[in-house]
Length: 162
Image 1: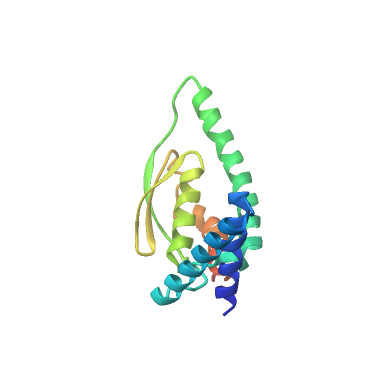
Image 2 (image 1 turned 90 degrees about the vertical axis):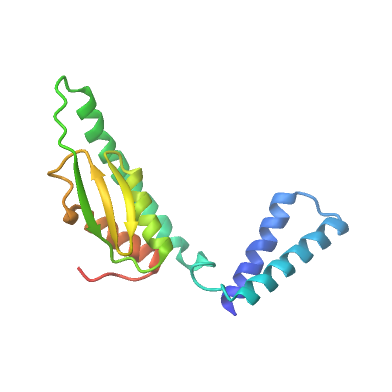
């Protein structure tokens, strides 16, 4: 019931905030749209933590702050590599196992790797990711443990075993 009320509240607030019109006709259109959406969500039986992740927003916000710091550090490494006269990169492909359970947490982890300069997630197959990195020495699966742990905690809402 909490997910139902949270989703309905967010949909109504979005409708009000994005429409910018508060005439009776448009307010009734908004109410009808929210009711139809809620009926469809209920009938499709998709109302869960993944559809309504509002409880995870504080943890996700902290994760994104941490990720921005990691992106800045990785940018510095890539900038130094680009400015050197000799190109001393040693690319590598590595398989990384994730502890994330939900698809949204796996997607967050994979996208976080891709957002970090010097690494790209090529495929996600179950709980394994194929990652391309510029430096073989820094591309060991252990290098991604902290990001995996933090994304699992932020999105799945749990702390993983280390």
